[in-house]
Image 1 (cartoon, rainbow, N blue to C red):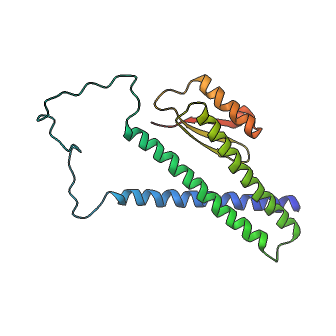
Image 2: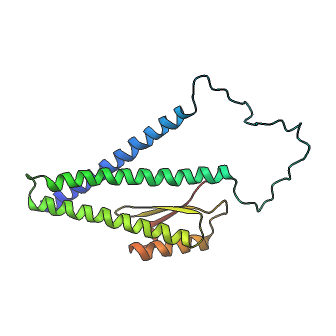
Image 3: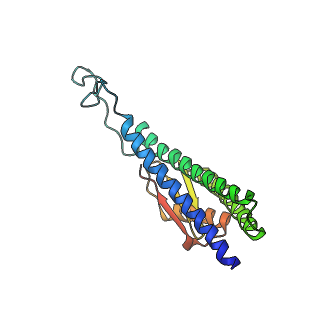
Length: 194
């Protein structure tokens, strides 16, 4: 009976976290779709602010080894900031639910113990994710975000436009396995679309 209650609490937490992430994702999508629509605001069709025919100099063609443009960096940086915000909001919602359950006077000792363990697990995940992100960026990657769950770890890595090689995957997998104790088969490395 005790195991069933623990599993029910964990399942409820996971359900609430998923619901919070989904609601936040849909809300952010609606907000960004409405952000560009201002009544009466003029917009250029081509997005250019000057006439290229009136300019005397011809700009050089970009080289193959050039660094990513500001708009490319902003788009991936925006993804990472948004993902961190979504993750933190979902964690905050789950933590609030767990704290309410822990402070409920009608809850028995086993329920309070399970809730305390779930809170500790969330805290451990948060610390491990931060350590993974810091270590991966210290290895020279542009940005990184880690998501830890009960049975797996997903790491999204921005390489600044370069391809993610097998050596890169091995480095990141080693960091994740050292920090979390998960096996390499439980780790998923995802390159961010630049």
